[in-house]
Length: 43
Image (cartoon, rainbow, N blue to C red; front, side, top):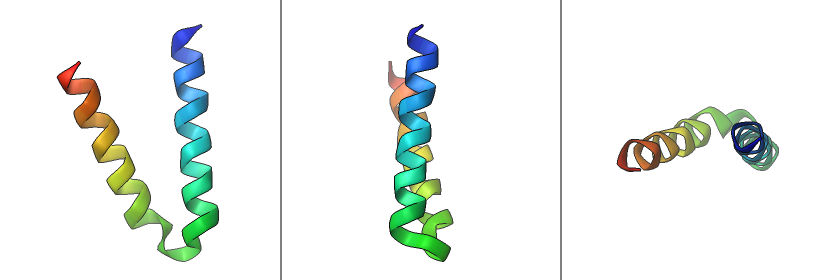
């Protein structure tokens, strides 16, 4: 259940970034994913 919840939270955040930045979103989404990846690696 936790994995599904985490996926939903990350997906929601990506959608919010997309809505906020529109065509500039890929750069911001990449940064967000990089931060998540680093956090998971440190856990």
